[in-house]
Amino acid sequence: MSGSIYGKIFSISTWGESHGEGYGVVIDGCPAGLSLDESQIQEYLNRRKPGQSKYSTTRKEDDKVKILSGVFEGKTTGTPISLVVFNENQRSSDYSEIATYYRPGHADYTYDMKYGFRDYRGGGRSSGRETISRVAAGAVAASILKELGISVYAYTKSIGPITIDYHNCRKEYSLNNPLYMPDPDASQKAEQYIKEKHEEQDSVGGVIECIVTGMPAGIGEPVFDKLDAALSRAVMSIGAVKGVEIGDGFLAATYTGSEHNDPFAYDNNKKLIKLSNHAGGILGGISDGSEIILRAAIKPTASIGKPQRTANKNNENIEIKIVGRHDPIIVPRAVVVVESMVAITLVDYLFQGMTSQMNKIKEFYNKN
Picture 1: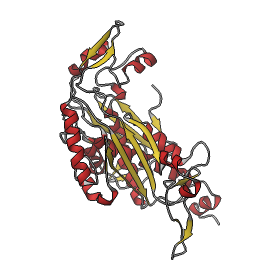
Picture 2 (picture 1 turned 90 degrees about the horizontal axis):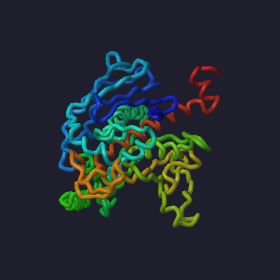
Picture 3 (picture 1 turned 180 degrees about the vertical axis):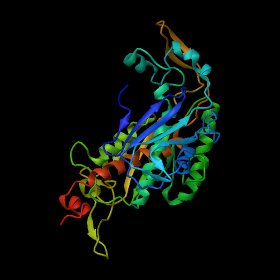
């Protein structure tokens, strides 16, 4: 299986299966001298681990991270950083029946067509637990961004038909409620909506919004490696994501040019700024110094108890009810995954941007 490596200079290589021994990631290209310990990474992993609320799977996992290499006396050494999280609460028997049929909304059929074989115990590499590796690496990337004064903040914008009111939002509220929704009124309505659908043995989806502040202008490439294209690819690689938009996204198609263009102006400090941000912080594939705004559409959990039609390997049409421990909604646990993939991408592009001008290279090596 190829495709488990992401990034050029700051790169990650992930491994593991949901019912194997565990998950891990090797981070290459992290500079030496970054303060890093397991507690920093654990803080991120705790945001996505299961069993924390009634809106997540009842599978109980501590998801404790262990640093195997690349850190000495609390500082990164510049060598590859290897991180591992061991699985502790697998129940493979829950999945024995699905070896004979294809679950709607899952990768069962496509894995069989590609490999002629699949790990039916929770989906193997296609499981949502694969995101453990991404979040562990994302915690390291976020630490690098923090050193540069850049922050990545994601939250739940909508669940099903319920959307936040920006005038009623508080960041601190999103960090302290199980849905990661910054609008308390919308959060309350969303909880009721999830409860109703869960009682019907169904699931729901939603939208995650991510805001990047402090990003300097001039990062990205103008053609195939556009920053917005890279961010879209990174976020779309998360299993539950079915759509990504930057700035106004699809709404831009309803505007005129005069409505969508962001005017430039100098502020009182003679700094060039934009007076609006319909572009979402990226112009021509390159960051423009304003906030980067990204949204990801998360599909409903595919594993539901409601009867569904499907087919088995004996060429029979059947009806199934999926058993096991599954999230009624993926969105809240996916918030930190979106943050992580955005952070990893930004760090990689910031490192690439260091060589974009000769004067930057000369300045780094103190050559006049």
